[in-house]
Amino acid sequence: MNTDKYISNAVKSIPPSGIRKFFDLVTNSKDIISLGVGEPDFVTPWEIRKEGIDALDRGSTTYTSNLGLPELRIAISYFLKTHYNLTYDPEKEIMVTIGASEAIDLALRALLNDGDEVLVPEPSYVSYAPCVTLTRGIPVFVPTDEKNNFILTPDDLKSKITPKTKVLILPYPNNPTGAIMKKEELEEIVDIIIEHDLIVISDEIYSELTYEGKHVSIASLPGMKERTILINGFSKAFAMTGWRLGYIAAEHGFIEAMNKIHQYTTICAPITAQYAAIKGIYQCEEDIVKMR
Image (cartoon, rainbow, N blue to C red; front, side):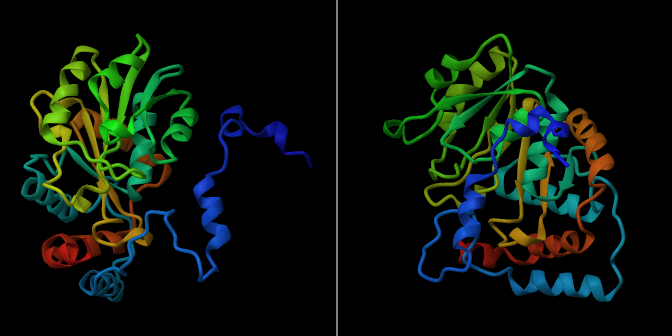
C-alpha cells in the first residue's frame, strides 16, 4: 500500500532530525566523541533514583493531575523563586510536562493560528522550526553573529518583525552555541517585544549550566512575566534525560490553554519521575553543583 498520499503535507514538509540520525549511526562506536545530543556525562544522582524505586515499591503507578503532582508544582515554584527570583502560583501558573520538548510543542499549539510567524534565533535547537511548521505557523529564522557572541541583538530582532509576527522563541542558554544573554542584553530587547505585542517562549533548559555569572530569566524583567512562557525541566541540571520530565511556568490563561491540549494527548507526566524530581529539588543541590 502506498501510504504517502495519506500523510499530511505538514509532516511531509519537515525532515527527520539530522542530529538523531547521526546519533543513531554512532551509538555503538567507542571511538567517537559525541558533541551531538544534549546528554549529561553523569547518571541521575542516587537520591533521585532511589526515590523513583521507592515510589514504585509503594505502588505509585497511577495517573496524576493533568497539571502534575501538587507537591512537585510547589517544589518547582520554590526552585524558581530561590534560583531566579521568579514568583509563580503552583496551583495556577505551573504545569508538569513530558520533557521540555512537550512543553515547547504545547506552547506553540496553544498560541498559533495558521500563518502566524515565529521568530527563531539561529543557530538553535533543531526542534523549534519543525514544531512551528506542524502547528501551521511559519518559522522565521533570525541569524545571530559570532561577533556578538551569538546573542539576539535589538537590530537582529527588529529586522525580522512583520505584522504577522506573534511569538519569539528565546533559547538561552543556547544549544548549540553555548551563548547566554546577560540581564542588560535582555533589557535591550524588552521594549521591542512589548512594542510589537510579542509572546516569548523562553527555553531555559540549560539555565543551571551557566558558568559565568548567574542565569537571568527574561520573565524576571519588568513587563515580561505576563508575556513569557517559561520552559525548563530536569533533563540537564539533574541528569534525568530518560525520565522525560519538564515544566512550564506562565500566566494562568496560558497554562489553561496548554493544559487543554495536554489532557487530550498525554494526560500527565509519569508519576514515578514526578516523585523523583521532588527529591531532586529539595535534596540534590550539591549534586547539581558537582555535575555542573
